[in-house]
Length: 137
Image (tube, rainbow, N blue to C red):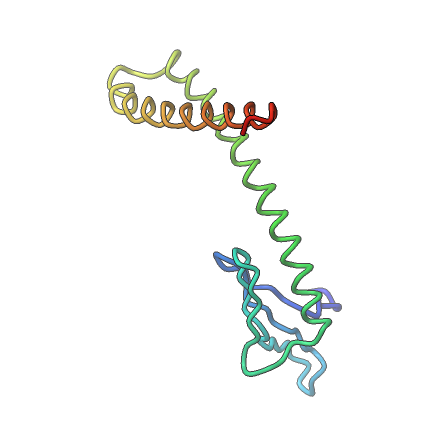
């Protein structure tokens, strides 16, 4: 473990994180983590914990972490979509070259419905953007 630990630790949870202040300046030289806040990324809420008041520095560091986390999650979302495109291409190749009749029977309806749904959403969103670009939306 490195000698210099960060001053704050963010325990990731589904909609944000629990924020801890890291303390190693104690008699036993143990790492102590003081739970100072709960953060909700979806609504931007920062809730102090344990009846404490957050310092301006605490708030700044938490807000910086929130901005970085939102950017990371957005980057991951688009990366997941690019992977989905790859999977669609691999699925098409599999269906054409290796799939058995039984395997195709097992997945065809579900794939067709999912692709139809996706196509419907994409076409509608594309039309909305085109109308908006023309100033008609």
